[in-house]
Length: 54
Image 1 (cartoon, rainbow, N blue to C red):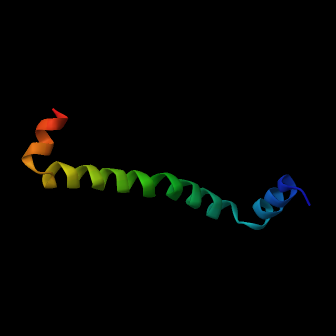
Image 2: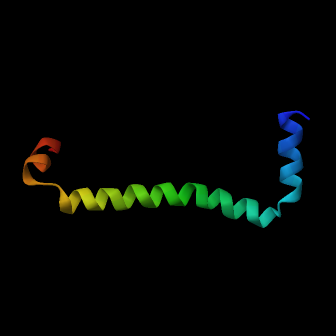
Image 3: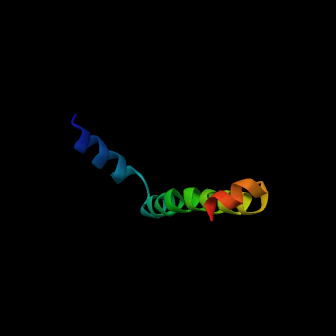
């Protein structure tokens, strides 16, 4: 069985709504982590590090 056939077989078994939810989560989870990390750096970095960025 080739990779294409395996992927097609898997996609046929998963409900369409589950595929959409997983696709959205695949974008939202890393984006949320990125935003939280930015906030932590904004408020938690020492003054010498903030001067470096500007």
